[in-house]
Picture (cartoon, rainbow, N blue to C red):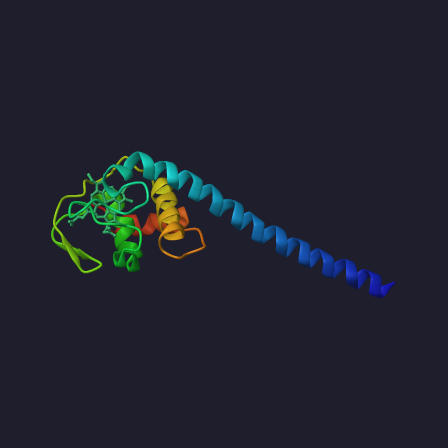
Length: 139
Ligand code: HEC
């Protein structure tokens, strides 16, 4: 009897563990799906659908070494970027317009999409993580 109870308890631990994991997975998929749409509507014009960029005009996001600084990426999505920068050793010096219409959630969805698709991450960049970062670099 005691053994049986033990087995049931163990099962419950395993099951609840599994359901936790899949909730996180569902959230990641939701963020990515939304992120793709936000990207297509606000970013793909310049950076192109596959994030490959456009010649010397718009830098690539796919494989970009700039992704190493995630806070900077989060900030430039909302507030834009100008002045000379290097991406994978190539110089760019144009204006990326600010996108103040993007909500904190949309910035988080974009960051999740970008880092899962092009930055080798397999996790959510949560809206709760993004909010204080945006607050700090507010312009
Ligand atoms: C009007 C064109 C344009 C749009 C729209 C645009 N960008 Fe940019 N983006 C640029 C330019 C130009 C730069 C380089 C700015 C510079 O030279 O300082 C840049 C730089 C970047 C960088 C840093 C460098 C790199 O390539 O890794 C990231 C990341 C980025 N943009 C992401 C986005 C995202 C996400 C969106 C959509 C919310 C977006 N951009 C919309 C033109 C654009």
